[in-house]
Image (cartoon, rainbow, N blue to C red; front, side, top):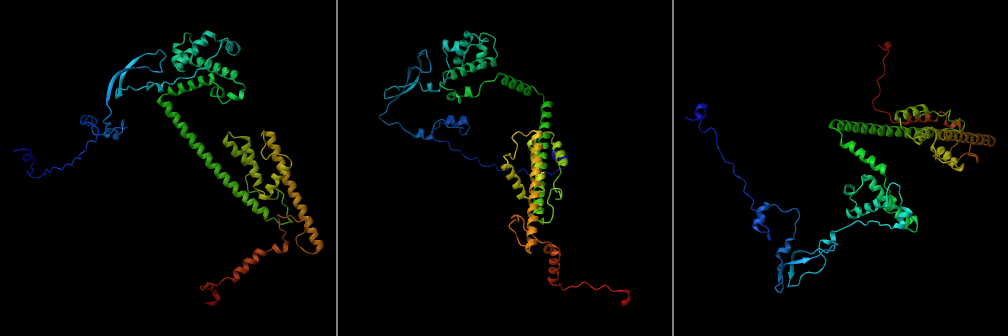
Length: 421
């Protein structure tokens, strides 16, 4: 009796079938690697091969005899001529010659040195003595401008910023003094970008504030950044909508100005205003809270140009250039922007009056000649259309079009009256 009998289960209710294991892929040991090294790596290839595999298959020539010898060597990176020993590969009993192979990695910083005469003439500073300056430059040469280490080794209590300021100010003064002209060293990094102590102190202070923030402050800053991104996206989208609306209204204004007949008045007071007025523009600018005066001027100019045609806008700009006035003021103060807008309005009024005078002269000459043809005084950008040709012309054309259209096969049933019954 077992657990299956207690639970009332049959003995063969469960089929214990062993799943076949997938066959292991046999990995072949690569050539040139010993079995022990391959077992230590677990069969995984190294990230970067140290020696090319083709080197293992190379066999030395039979006439070469290679030995390894314990030989002394010196390095040009050291100034004390220290003699050390290492194992060297010797071919046919001839040891290798030349400098130590790792001496090429000994890189040092070129420190500018000064003389006593140059120091007395260009480098005197009441906050620094010559001994302190000499000690500073010796440490800079010894520790390769690692100012954290230099500040730790410096005998007097000086901050890292003070040490940097003194070193770079001295180097900059020496470079300028030794150069024949200031332009020769203008592109040097020390001269082009002088070290600023206040900026470095402020940078470290801001960095310490950021690093000392708590999790809650970091989360709050992230929320502020997300809200700022949303606000900027909304402003960009609203600006795109406003520009599209201004483009539509400017096109509408251009079409209207092109359809004006000669006898009508085309002053800006009689043209239907389709663009937002100055009050609405100022209201939209107040919503931005911060904006440049040049941007406000451009919005006002666009609002004024939306009621005129493209040719009129070009004439206004050409008149401004003839008068020697910039299309955009160089100093956009409040008074300058107001005068610029007033000048544009006066030029527009003058162009409208000039156009009306030309229309009246063309109309008078056509009445004297008895025809309505084009006269020499008629402006080229407007076509003179008599009133009797335009009056009701469009309506008659539509009626003729309706009459000439093909009649449909299905007619509307006639409405019966009560007397027909």
